[in-house]
Length: 110
Image 1 (cartoon, rainbow, N blue to C red):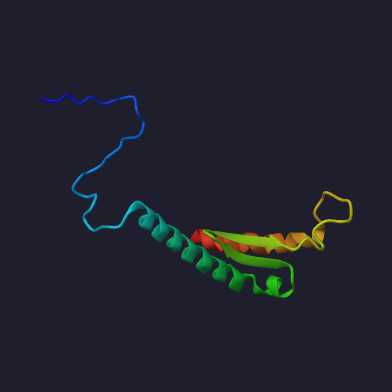
Image 2: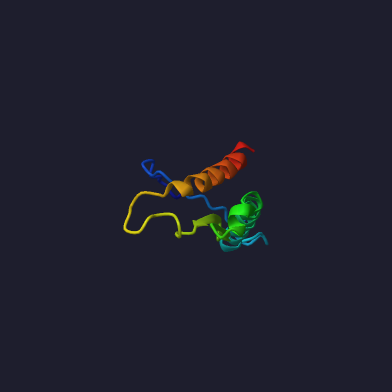
């Protein structure tokens, strides 16, 4: 006869089923890779949609948009963003920020 105790103060429970360890399913590393690949594909699709919505600003050299791993990176070119030695944004940048906000709001509304 064996006695098994449990620690009811633990916040995470470990579950393992001896039957499922070698049942031909995918392992944890493969599952994580699949999830990561899916996130990368979604980020690439989102970046493409943002590029389409902000194509004018991108064409003018004001923005760059790229998918980076599972994230979308919007890079605002620093030329024209700040005056020399200044910490305040130039007023000319506000329409670009509004364009970015509009494109992001459209994505969030879906």
